Amino acid sequence: METGLKLISDISRNGKSLNWLTGVLFLSDERFYNAEKVRLWETYFSELIVAGIGKEPESLPANVHWYEYESDGSRSEIWNTISKKVNNSWVFFLEDDEQPRFSSFPEAQSLENTQWPPAIINIQKESTTYHFYQMRLVNVTMNEDDIFRGHHLTDATEFVRSHGINLSSKPIIIERESSVYSHIDIDQELSLKNQAPKLYLVQGNRYLQEKKYVRAAAQFRQLLKKQKLLPFDRLAGVNGLASCFAEQHKWEKALSLTKQSLEAESFQRLPYLIQFRIHELRKDWQKAFDVLKQYYERLSLFSSASFDRKIGEEKSLVNLANIALKAGHRAKATDYFDRLFSFKRGNADEAMLEKALLLSIELNNLERSVYLFERIFNDRLPPCQMDAESREQIDQVMTMFMKKDWYDYVSTIYKKLHDAHPEDQEYKRKLIVTLTKTNRLDQAKKMVANIV
Image (cartoon, rainbow, N blue to C red):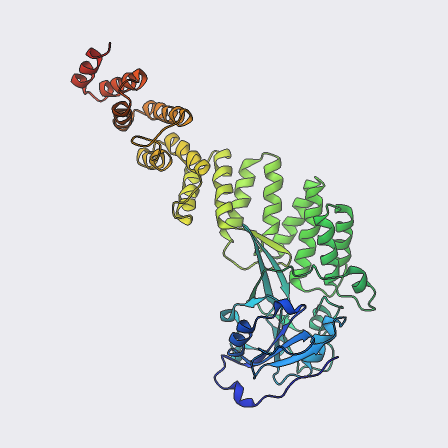
């Protein structure tokens, strides 16, 4: 049952940073209700509405509206109904555990009835961030038409395109942990007379995750036949189709589509990642490096595509360093290792440190090689304990140092090892060699004389 909205005094608008905006928090489940978050949001929005199933929570702040809906209600119908009952011209919809970045909201004076900022919804999972675009900030004064289409999909494509609404280039940022589209029942959405275009994207990406590439491609093709599409959804359709071709090893078709996608909009990520993966599989290291470099250069910028994803900076730097090595760009690989260490504040894993050490030796960089050697092995050199594996690894590195004529440093290492293990003839022999190479002949002769 829809109980409507409580009335509040206009006094509550005073002092609000978003005094032109009604905020709506739609709760699909009571577990998402967070009284502390609602109290905080109430200080930003001119008017705040929480839509949920059942009775109003006792902890709901006094100046916040409660909108009750039935559990089987259509999300789009609920949003459309609320849109017609608010006190402001602009309404911003949020769901469940979403957290908006309030600094990303536009200034009131920059708003136009026919130019709406889209919302970009970011979901972080380990080292990958997934991006989804939706229309969440809407102007409700244009006419009486319903803005949202679909059952639970809440797609505003038809309204935006039919009313000549343009999209501003700067999106509103929303962070969230829960899935954006897992609640969508495809059959339920298909049963509607007027289906939301975004349905093809949702279904296509589900098929893609299930590795049903032919079915996924059919969904993306159906989407791309639509005349009225939002630009970020069109890009998502092209990229989805390219992903299908890439997974089917139809690499030329995939590369052709990614090229078209990037020509339409360079500020996105998935086309670069598809190209990178294809070139990597082909072992075309130069092309793989060039594409990944372009991707990395745009890493800090907004993606303009929905259903996009971003591989984090750390993993990107690791990939760049590795691919630069394979492409023969030793100096560039070193630069990416440096950026990686700076990004991680020195807390790189040992495998990466070892790879950087080998590269530094190859590039004749003594200072950096010494630094990396000590980062890796300082806790294994005397007075610390050293196992057989560590001994072998240290000997291998010292051998590489000697091939570079870095005998002074090698001598200090073998002096430390010899002092800790005077009975070890191998350490003694190598120390004698380094003393000889560094013109400390008297010390070398003395040690030779003491050999039994």
